[in-house]
Image 1: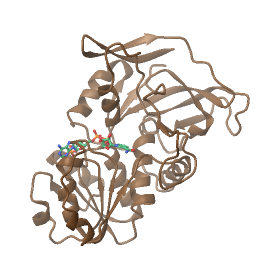
Image 2 (image 1 turned 135 degrees about the vertical axis):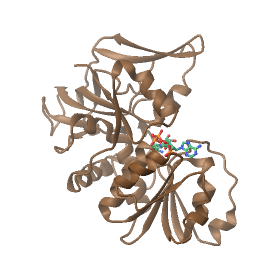
Image 3 (image 1 turned 180 degrees about the horizontal axis):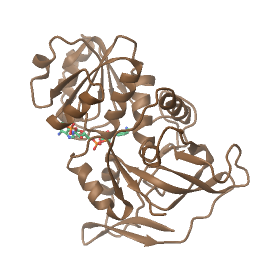
Image 4 (image 1 turned 90 degrees about the horizontal axis):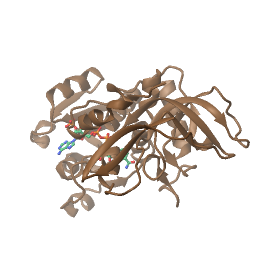
Length: 331
Ligand SMILES: NC(=O)c1ccc[n+]([C@@H]2O[C@H](COP(=O)([O-])OP(=O)(O)OC[C@H]3O[C@@H](n4cnc5c(N)ncnc54)[C@H](OP(=O)(O)O)[C@@H]3O)[C@@H](O)[C@H]2O)c1
């Protein structure tokens, strides 16, 4: 099979599409022939940790394809089943935090930028029928994270308003789609007017430019929940927007992790800060049911052939994309 390898050579990250031996399956595993994969900001962070001389990496946490081979102890699936990959490894039941041993696919574990992947049968689910292969391929990591952040952790209630900074994000576009499917009022920000226009088309009720005075722009709004993933550049502004007693769910820090926070804002106004990461197998199944019930379709920015992964990653690095970037895997 062919895979997209990343190596660091002369301090440069170099990608190459190479033939390697097919992986063998264990008794509880399946081999999936991938049709589409998806990229996430995480892929850039994973590559950023790679050093000269490290073994080549196969990144990629999102994917969908067809089961080609099945381990002897696998129940509930058969060869030919169309499946999506759950990138949340070794986290079965819904719990406040992830259990010991939890890991995300596409770091230490071989990822989805390959023609085939061998993975535990606990990490596959049947592909929602209303999704195309590209849509199924970009769904997993972001949709799972968005579901747990908005529904499990922030526990969004009817009639509440949610604020989403950085609507260009692949994950945040899912939060917008899920919140609108639930009937909530959604306020979004972006540094790009074009992305704000796209967000309006997806149902955003109010849009503001990230470079404006948010408190002034949104003085008429009562924000109950913020889903925050940008970190340094927006966290304090997000906090100030919340109604007293509001909830802020945080799952990332694209612009940086170090904050100088006014604690008075948190305790006196009784704000709940909710850390959240990915989700369990239970939540992955719940998310797929939700997506099927509400006929949610991922927002795909662009699809690149696997051989053009470097260009695709550049688009994320420069924050040009709106939504998810798909990778078409060669047959
Ligand atoms: N903990 C978890 O389980 C988990 C899961 C998924 C993602 N994450 C993290 O969440 C973040 C988002 O991931 P993603 O894959 O959805 O990212 P993405 O598609 O690359 O989107 C990032 C968005 O953040 C906004 N942004 C970036 N830098 C900014 C700045 N300096 N000021 C204002 N806005 C800025 C941009 O929105 P605009 O272009 O609209 O301004 C950009 O499109 C990443 O940090 C990722 O590692 C964590």
